[in-house]
Image (cartoon, rainbow, N blue to C red; front, side):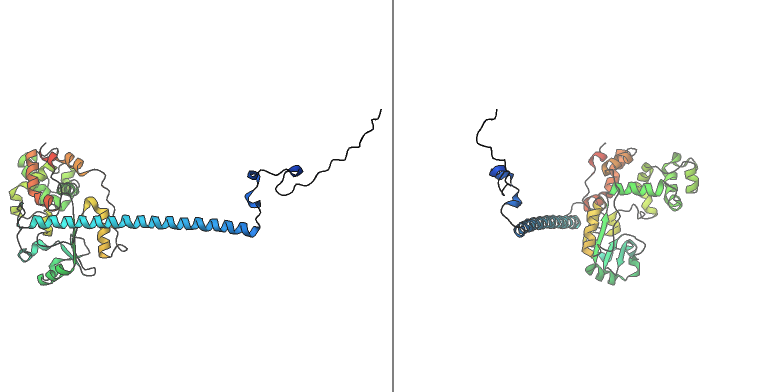
Length: 336
């Protein structure tokens, strides 16, 4: 049976209006995309550009802050380098003054009283106006200059030297000259050490050449090298070789006021500072130092065979270098 009633209207669908859901229900504000919030494309583009400009400004400010941090760190580093050099120069000045308690040969000589033969390690580079106490092959030796000209250049040129822990320097010299075949050093020094202190103090035959000695497994020990240095007869025959002559005798720091004193232990920083002072940082690079072990551990190993009494005498012989250049006294090495 058909029931009569009001006919149902057909279902219609209205399109959603912007900002509303189906049947006109408003969308929650959180569901709207920010780009549709009543803005046109030009406004959106300007917003993004503004955001990019702000980010760029922040990056620039951070870059400036980083540059300032680097500048301050570099300034502090240079101030520290300056203080370090001032301390080194002052120490030498104090040690060389009449008030200094340590006495050593030649301390109170004037420059004019130094014999020419003792000035052969002052190397002059006129091009860069520097005087260096060392023996590189390409620099001119003092012997080519008159003493008057040297005095003038000592007043106007930049003068510098590099030093090393005195005991480590001796170990390095011994290793380089006597632990590998070196004919000149063997004949002039090594064979002398063997005759005096090795092989039963002369009772056994000493090989004539380095090749023969090394083939037979014969060469001076470090202890014999130390005895050679301490023997008064050594310098009666000839002055110390430059490789183990004390630096105060090579470079005369009490007579020559060096502008810069570098150390091998701080070679990288000191060489960078020196090259900046000389304006050569773009032309010369010092080789990196490959020293992995501490000087103290190195010394203990090498001096183990040297009696404590000889160690103390050796320290006395090189004490001026320890004191002048600020190297600490190796107490543990001298008393054990």
